[in-house]
Amino acid sequence: NNNNNNNTTGSTSPSGHTATNGIPNGAGGSVGSGKSPQEEVFDGTMRVGFVLRRQDSDSMRLEIEWLGGYWKLPPMQQSQATPSDLRPSDSDTSLEEARARIVSSFNTEEKRTAVVQAEQLQEVYTALTPAIPRLFEVQNMNVRELSSSYQNDLNFRAFAMTRCAAAMRVNSNVRNCTHTLRQAKTFVKLPPRGAEDLPERAVLSYIHRSIGVNYAMLLEWAQALKYQKEAIQLLPTNASAYYLKGIVLQELGHWEEAVDCHLNAFALDPDFRSPLMSLGECWTRLGRFGEAIKACRLCLRLQPDAPVAQFNMGQAIYQELRAKQFAGSWNSEALRERRAQAKRCFEVARTAFPKIWTDDETAMLRYFEEEPPLCDQLPIQSVRSWKAYGWRP
Image (tube, rainbow, N blue to C red; front, side, top):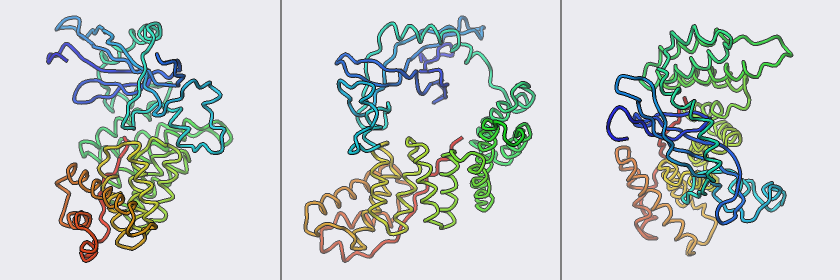
């Protein structure tokens, strides 16, 4: 962006676009397969970049210039593999390992990419060139306009109104958001029993989940729980509703039930990191420190710079050692590595969130700064909660 109002930079795909710092951006890309220059077989996601320019200062018409693209690859190399090799058939292959070889992702420290062939890029450019400028030329529709649009697709009208309502929540306008959500619900009609009703149930589940989020933001936990349960009943594959139900149960102190919800959420959406962070706290609260550490470790493999997961791991190790539940030798290298890891986790969390770092966290960190047996003479700190709830829109 050349700091004027006539240029827009971004990256995009048929899946849509978002806005970051006022600059239209796109996440995702075309899914395909091919070979890198090293003849590595892969399934990947193509990402392409573009610049939009106004044709003149008085015009709303935009023209597009393509900047290039690349393949986003899976975290683990799959050298000389055939399509049949990409299917996990070996009983010794874990789901996590298979996924790392198959699913393209940047949720690891190493970001693996490959060059896109020119003809593949041209194919994407040809398909998207007419569409991208039109996306940004159209002005945003407000709720009033949406409520009378899409006469032939009322399910989409309700979905669009729900998504628009979520934007109100960002500005703390929760009451208006709830009013819009209830209005959207009136446009969705379930068909007669036995007929195909997945589209209607999906939209209604989204609406109920969103209403539940509003009640959670108002700290009305009973109502929040009610709507998340209804969202799950309408669409049992709603990963976000399971996660949000788990959050409500955490607030109510029902840790075991919350664990079940977060496990369901992660099983339904393995890219969803928030349930793993919550599992770290829930299992620590339940005294199951080994499981808490595993959940945090997996979260950090997906997002190495997640401060809440760093804090939860440091705290789980702290509570494990103070409860004398460490399985290894207390004079072993494994214990020294465990203590060093916890110290690093706390230091990362403190740097990321200094405003919520308190004397209690400092006391836990001090336990790892002191050497045994001096550290064991320090007072034992209770479990702390770092709340970083992900209210998905």
